[in-house]
Length: 422
Ligand code: SDX
Image (cartoon, rainbow, N blue to C red; front, top):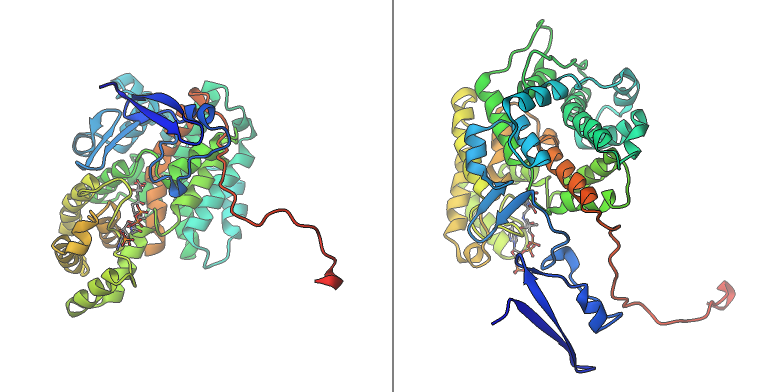
C-alpha cells in the first residue's frame, strides 16, 4: 500500500495520485486534474495553509511542543525571553547568545516620546486597552520606516527585537491611560516580566519591585501563550506578511484577530460568564442553556485539541501559587465545579470539549490585579514571538501572496436598470 491518495474526476475519468508527505497532501495537483474546480473549506477546518517547523500540536493526545521541546519542560525550566529566542531561532541560546538577546531586548524597551505623549495620550478616557495596543503597534511602523526592507535579515532582527521589547511598554501605557494615571518608564534593572509589572503598578515609590512569585507566574503564562501553530491570529500574521507589509502592520492585524471573543478575547469572556452565572445553584441551568445552544461555555472547546489543553493543566498549577500570594479568587470554586459538571456531561464529552488555555488564565490575571480589559493585552504580549517567528519563517520559505479563490453563488449576469424603471 503506497503512502499516497488517488483522486478521480468522474466527469472526465482522469485521476491523479498525490503522495502523503509529513501527514499532508499537496493539493496544487488538483488544478492539473480539474482546472477551475476549487477545494472549499471555510474556516480552514481541514486545510493546512503552510508547512512550519516552529510548533507541533497533537490535538488528540493534548501535546504541545515549541521546536520539539514539550511545553511542560519549558514552563518549568525556561523563561519567556529564552522561549522567544527558541521560537525565533530554532535552538535554545548559549549563555553568550542569551546574554546578548536579553541585553538587546532590555535596552529597546523605551518608545519615542511622541508615542508616549502625543499618541497614547490622544485616546478617549474609556478607550479599550486592546484598541490602544493594536493602534500603538501599527503606529510603530511610522517611527521605523526602514522596517519595510523585509528582505534584510539584520533589519528583520531589529524590528523583531523592537516589537518584543516595546509591546509591554505600550501595553502598560494603555492600562495607565485607561485609569488616568501617568505612564511609567521601563526599569532596565528588572527582568522582562517584572519590568512589565513595574510599568503597570508603580505609583510614587522610587522603584517598584513586583512580588517574585507573581512575576514568575506571569512569565510562565507568557510562555504558554507564545505560539500555537496556525491559530486565527498567526494565520492573519502570515497572510498580511505575505503581501510584504512591514512587521508592525502585520502584527497590528494579528492583534485585531486575537481581540475577538472566539480567540484571544475568551479569557475576558470566561470571567463575564462566571460572574453572570452568579451562584452554584445557577450552574445547572447555565449548562442546560449551553446544551440548548443558547450560551457558549467560554474557555471550553478548541479547533485542534480534542483532549485537555496541556496549557490549561499548567495554568491550574500556576493558579495555586498565585492564590497563595493574592488570596483565592472567589470565582475559582465556581470554575472548578463548572469544569467538573462539563467533563461528566455527554454533550461536552461527545464533542470533545475540554478546558482550553483561557478557562483559568482570567482567574489568575484578576487575582494579580489586572482588569478584565487587560486580559487579551497579556495574551498579545505572550503571542508576539510566535507571530514574529511565523512571519520570519514565511519570508524565508518564499511564501507566495495569500490569495485563495471562492465558489461564486451569486446571481448570473444581468443588465443595468435606470432608477426610474426599478
Ligand atoms: C484560543 O486556535 C488556537 O490555537 C487558539 C488558541 C491559541 O493559543 O491561539 O488556543 C487560543 O483561541 C482558545 C479558544 C478560546 N475560545 C473560547 O474558549 C470560546 C469558546 N469556544 C468556542 O467558541 C469554540 O470551541 C472554538 C471557537 C474555540 C472552536 O470552534 P470550532 O472548532 O469551529 O468548533 P465549533 O464551533 O464548530 O463547535 C463544534 C461543536 C458545535 O456543536 P454542534 O454544532 O456539533 O452541535 O461544539 C460545540 C458547537 O456548538 N461547541 C461548544 C463550544 N465550543 C464548541 N458548545 C458550547 N460551548 C463551547 N465553548
